[in-house]
Image 1 (cartoon, rainbow, N blue to C red):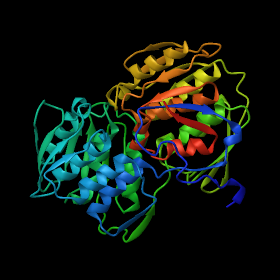
Image 2 (image 1 turned 120 degrees about the vertical axis):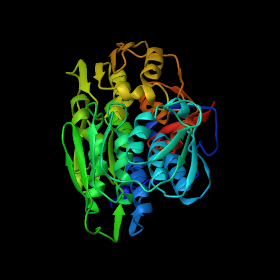
Image 3 (image 1 turned 90 degrees about the horizontal axis):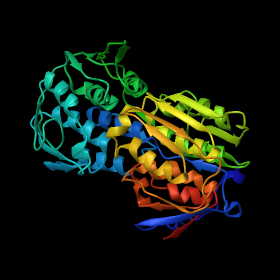
Image 4 (image 1 turned 180 degrees about the vertical axis):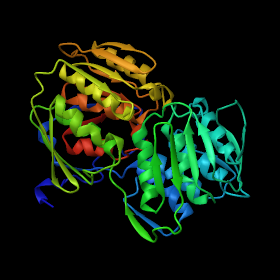
Length: 431
C-alpha cells in the first residue's frame, strides 16, 4: 500500500467521542490528513452472512460491519432472551422474524422502537405462515411487536407481495438451510430492489444452493452437501461509498481512494461509478479492491433523471449532490423510502428546501429544482433518527457551513463516519 495514502490522524482525534445533540461542521483543506478511506464492512452483507453462519457453523467471517444494526443482530442471535429489542434496526427485525420462526421449540417476543412498530411486516409474516410458522401480533395487526413460537418449517411453494421490501424475500431465502425441502416463491406483485434479492441468492449459491430467478417467481434448491468450511471476506459497503462520490463531485479538484470494494460486486449501490460519471466523478480501479476517484467536469449537465428502484438507499446522496452542483434532478422508484427509519421523501423535501430548492414529492418520486446559489446562512439539518440523512447532507460542507442535529445517528451503519470526514479536512465543533 502507498504510504502517502495512509492517515496520520489519531483514533482519538474525533470530536464525536461522546453523544452530542448537534455539531457545526466546516471544511479546511489544510486539515486534510489522508487520501484513503477504508470503508466499513457492508452492513447488508454482514447481516446476511450472520444468519447463514447460525445455520452452518463451518462459515468463518472477516471484515464484519461494526454498525449498531449488525451488533444488534449479533447480540440477538447469540443470547437466549425471550424478549428481543432491535431498536431502529429494520434488517434485524425482518431477518430475525424468519430466523426465530425456524428455531423449533424456541419462543421469542420481537420488539423495536416506536418507529419500528409503525413499519409493516405483515407480508413477511403471511409468507412464513405458509411454511408452517406460528407468529402472533402483540399490538397491531401486520406490525411489530411479534410473538414467535419456533417450529420445524417445511419448504414448498409460497406466494408473497414483493413490492414493499426486498428484505421480506431475503429473510425467507436466508432460512433455507433450516428447511427440509426446496422452496419456490411466487411474486404476487413485481419485486422491488431485485438486486438485493439476487445478492442474497448469490450467497446461498456460494454454499451450494441452486438459484433460478424469473419475473414472477424464484426457486432455491438445496444441495446434497454444502461447500464448507469456508472463510468469507465481507466486502465493504457501497452505500457508504456514495458519500465520497458526492464529496468528490462537490469538491473543486479533490482525489480519493476507497478501499475494500470489488468491481464485480453484487451490492446494488455498486452502480455508483456509472451514475456519478454523469455528474462529475471519474472512477477507476487501480487495484482489485481499491477504487480511485477524482473530480471531473459536470458543467454540461442541467438535469439528472434516474430510476432508483434497485438503488433507493443512495437517493438522498444523489439529491444532495445535485443541489450542491446546481443541477435539477428527477428521481423515481423511491416507494420504499416512505417506510424506512423515517419517511425519507418527506425528510428530504424538508431539508432540501432549507437551501431554497424547489422540491415536489409523490409516493415514489422526488423532483427538485436547484437554486443557482446556496444561501449564505448556516443551515441546521435535522436527521430524523436516520443515519443516511446525516451522511447524505454532510458533503455539502464543501459548499457551506452546516449544523447537524443528532450526529450520532451514523452509528447505525457507519460509526467512524465523522472521524473519516475529519481526515478529509472537516472540522467538527460541538454546538
